[in-house]
Length: 252
Ligand SMILES: [Zn+2]
Image 1 (cartoon, protein in one colour):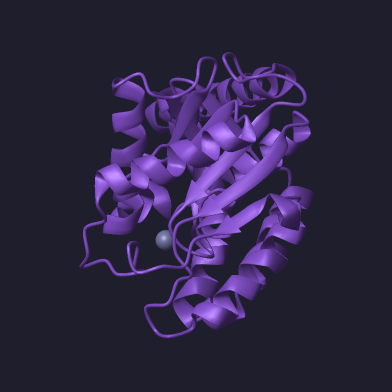
Image 2 (spheres, protein in one colour; image 1 turned 180 degrees about the horizontal axis):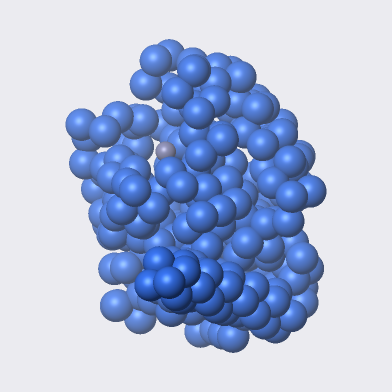
């Protein structure tokens, strides 16, 4: 009898947990994220390498497209670590076609100041200067980039956060320009796909984007444009990474 009672208790807790997740998700989907600029806002995604946009930011890009943001992209390198830069630039353009970023709104920086190399520390002032010029020239309302953990810890990702943090804390960004950073999560949460949803609902302070299954297929199509990067472990990444389905972001 005791075992039956215990099983009933477990079932009740699981059912309550499921309903809580469902209810929170439904509420989250029916509301516009607070603090995110509205319809028609000019949003700039800042990445370090071709494929960052699809591997990490697809839920944000597709979520902001739902909110009818005008999306643009600034990529600080051609991803030339293995001398594949030219191919990777083309792959990035194809991926952006799938994710809804017009080619005229894509800028890929390909110079010696910002090499694709985890062993090189990009100069924060130089990154910040380049970014600020781009933001001002294009009237950007919202900048989206990595947080201090850089999702994968890649030093080039972290350099982008350092630059945007500097611009923000020194008050150099134009008035009305907000910054959202993509939350890095621990390795366990990173690879449990949609099972991370309860943790994301609990731990997201500002903005949460969760893709529908149709949008997940779109994100995977974008990722598969990066043919030079589709090694066996990346195929596993497509299956298990939460970043193919969920993005949680914090405002600076
Ligand atoms: Zn990267």
